[in-house]
Length: 308
Image (cartoon, rainbow, N blue to C red; front, side, top):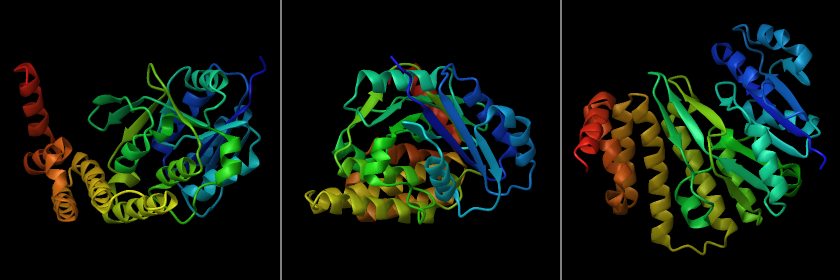
């Protein structure tokens, strides 16, 4: 069986501290028909020198000003020729065998347009946590974007059908893309087993920098999703889904240590839908925001040891 070409794009801007490991993780893949392109937005931190170091092994690289992450990804996808595409941010990494395993799944499941697998989250303190996403279900997806972007691969035919990244978005690029795919009837597949990628959560990541902007975009994407499905979901469910958006962002900022923003976001979630009081995530975030990450983790460990 011939191996389809896979095109991976890395958008980058001033992330030289992580970029080399990202590049190495892609170049180390055991998949022979791989096209790797790096689009740096004109960094001033030595990123261009890192790209030049690996130039002979890259299909293409450039360091020049662009219009942001979506623009860089779209450039890469337009200029590439892979039947399967993906993007890996400059602070994330692929696990060994990730590309091969994703291709094998898509070959075995020709009806699947997008495949995703598990993800290993890495925090600044050195701790890691494996995130195993659930199988795709539209109602659950409207409540939570459980598709881990670094561990996701897409058939080019899907992009031909739904279009590229929305350049007007800064925070919810992937959620918007998955939402449009779901609305157009694209089938999602989950690849079980070891994580496909590593997601690095650090203080400078976009997910921890502008919580209000992130929530605003996420709710806009949700509203477009509801509209695409004819607003066939009850009003209370839609309010709850929007409240869950506040919980998602509150979780991110609580991990970064911004307890004030986390508490404010929890309050807004509660105002939108009191149903969030039934969410274990609400109380987990509240505990973290009130006591701090260290005490919160200690309490969870004590609970686990006690069999709770």
